[in-house]
Image: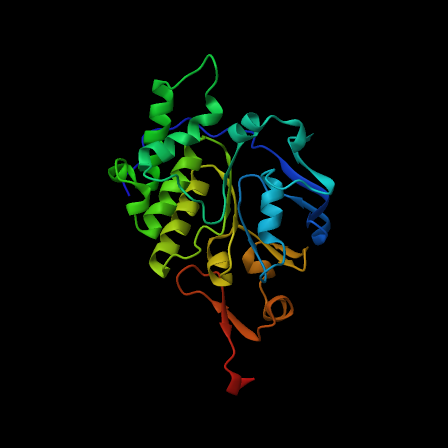
Length: 274
């Protein structure tokens, strides 16, 4: 990917995003109850856990796309519910699972939608909006695809285009819900490398993943969930143990050192070795 044009500096004082006493439900089905969580500023946080444990549900609440039935999410000490939607979108970018692009939309137009929070009655499309979109497309390596329709792209290209749209919002907080879903292995690592680079450039990221080895390799802060609760969090090298993996995922395993990243690597035990 080519180097991105210079972008506005990410704020020296990162935003604070916290959840207190959170209760999240779909109709009468409670997924999360009494959960407290603070997004570590300046970290690449990865949330992992078994299916239906509440990972994506928590992320939706942090992005205010799911209203808590109890407790609250706060941004810089103020309830998230007290912010206007546009004001939240200027501070926090969210990429949901499997987003659907409008028919026949080009990459350039999709990325341009990330500038919606900055538009208003007295502020229409400007040179700074154009520059923000150019930076986002360069940063994610889709600039040369700008005039292509999103529907024509490969899975990895589409995901990078969606991330470019989120980057065009120019937020310091970025939430990605399972950004590697349905991608082949090469494109999965391409997206994760992009997330790691965005973190190095100063953004705070929260990413939901399914693959424990990918999570351990890329996270600077790992959050492990089970049955709607956080059971462990911290640096991957400090919390990923064979006992934790067995208790949370029901997978007997051995933990070894990843020869490339020197992060914990989970090696499932063969049935004959158990």
